Image (cartoon, rainbow, N blue to C red; front, side):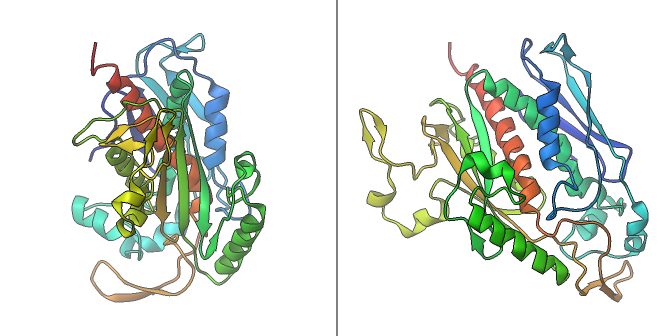
Amino acid sequence: MNNTFGTIFCATTFGESHGAALGVVIDGLPAGIEVDPAFIQRELDRRRPGQSRVTTSRSEADQAEILSGVFEGKSTGTPLAILIRNQGQRSGDYSRLAELYRPGHADFTFEKKFAIRDYRGGGRSSGRETCARVAAGAVAKLFLRESGIAVRARAESIGSIRAKSCDWDQVENDPVRCGDPEAAAAMEEQIRRTAEAGDSLGGIVYGEILNVPAGLGEPVFDKFDALLAHAMLSIGGVKGFECGSGFRAALSRGSENNDGMTPEGFVTNHAGGILGGISNGNTICFRIAVKPTPSISALQHTVDKNGDPVELRITGRHDPCLVPRIVPVVEAMAALVTADLVLRARCSRV
């Protein structure tokens, strides 16, 4: 099992949903970077459970403990370790699932691969694993800040509701992280009604990487957009990725989809800021498709370990929609990709 992401800026995550703790070891962060514990904590607070009416009621402080790699507020160039202890486990909620395979989850495939699985919340396949990613992404953001690069994301649609506009300054002020007050209210109401019916919703998250200089990314296998796709699709629940005009490009002509150039720069940004796998200086923009939360209380059909049919209603504390809490995870993974490519670019020429 590979638990490390990155080539130079590497993040190795560990821990399970119902274990003692989760954490990350970051290697490759240059020395002398200001590491702000308060910023790291704010990023974790954005992802933590129990933060609004449309998220799981599980209560976790998600307090970041920096164990190594920082001295007098700056990175030392040695591995930077962050620990996040679990405190709100209710493992008893999952006792019945030891003998069952939950629809839409990794229970069946994990057991086929390893012949053993931690059924308590999915163990390593749980969405709780992403708190370690967010901690690593916060450090990557601090590194990128020194180059003026920023990452942001928002909910573009949830269920059948799509945002028509976005005020980025308001994204963190609504429970669904949308930035369109009218759409946000409709999204929240749709989540509430769907959850009351024992079901869940999916959606689309839009992300941007700002102020990226031209020249980041490798031209063959490690294209900027290829690494972004890898990063995004590694997040549990993400089932689709597109960069720039994405799948809409298949419906257009070359004369429509090409980004014309002038002495002042590109006229459009259908490429999403990436050409030939290398950043072109435009804002890098992408979207991901997030599936509905598979843990629902509506009646479902599955099988047990013996292959016998079983009817199942999943109880416990689960997000009725993953989109609001996945937004900071998307930002974290985009920051990790970008930080790694910034360091790799320093090796590409004298």
